[in-house]
Amino acid sequence: MKIVRIVLQLLVLYGFLLIGEAIQALLQLPMPGSIIGFLLLFSALLLKIYPLEWIDAGATFLLSFLSLYFIPATVGVVNYGPLFSGKGVLLLPIVIISTLITMAAAGFVSQQIANRSAAQKEES
Amino acid sequence: MAFTSSAIVFSVLTVATYVIANFLYMRFRKTPLNPVITSTVALVAILILFDVPYETYMEGGDWVAAFLGPAVVALAVPLYKHRELLQKNLVPIAAGITAGVVAGLVSGTLFTRWLGFTEELILTVLPKSLTTPVAMQVALTIGGIPSLAAVFVMVAGFTGILLGPYLLHLLNIDSPIGRGIGLGASAHGLGTAKAFEYGPEDASMSSVAMTLAAVLGALLSPLAAWLLL
Image 1: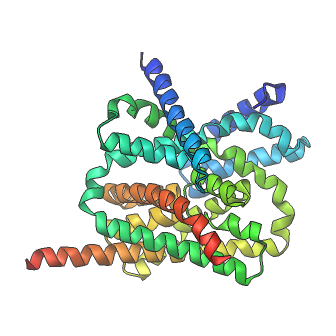
Image 2 (image 1 turned 180 degrees about the vertical axis):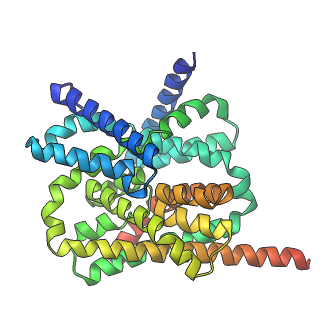
Image 3 (image 1 turned 60 degrees about the horizontal axis):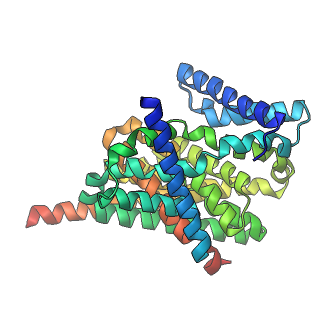
């Protein structure tokens, strides 16, 4: 029975994806349909329109193999060998430095604001 | 998607390689044995060895990649389960993720522009901090190269795992919220795996950050491309 439930819930997830893609195409939005589907499902859960129990097993199952689904794409690097033997190799330090800047900004700002609001709570 | 013999051969091959790669990772638990890296290296080697064009491989690869879209939708479930954590820390989380996403988009675009890369490559580097399925779809939407974007996402992830701890220590980022948001917003799923080593609160924060950064990044990437190019 668990398998039936998982399969049905996977179909529901696929349904949310199709609705997201339809909205994206209809409104010509510059973001992936899957993100629109994500926002729809998250809103439906928050507003208690759709109960967690009806999606939990399927979503958890699907996400437990998440890294499998993007392997076909990473294999596509086979077509870009020449890029990395030339100037393109500079893209690697760019990505590394930009990632560190991202981490520093996100970590520093969230910690500073969290500390400040904790201090305010203690004063009041 | 095609129902050809290559479709069957290469989808089965991809899954089998992943299963073996996962087994190796579980057995030895070493970061460089990350199953995405080992599977990719093994499959690339097979394609080169047997002279198979990527397009032929993708007849099967497409079947595996078809799960990406529903998986992005499914990310709503873990985020919903963390909603109390999110509500309690809404302001620091939102501010930290916004700062990180904006810093990442701006620095990535400016560096690639200064070094004179083509617009297509700039747009490919842009979504590197987002979780792979979202980054690839964002790259596709704004005019980058999805498979190359996935490679940069991996580079970002490994930067987070290998250099992140030193950076966080250097900047005195030592709270679960600071570490979790920093790792999740910059290094997505790999960063979240690292955050698990600091503790469950770091991991929850990182998981929330990964999802929210992906959503915000998907919204802001087209804007960044339009403003900065």
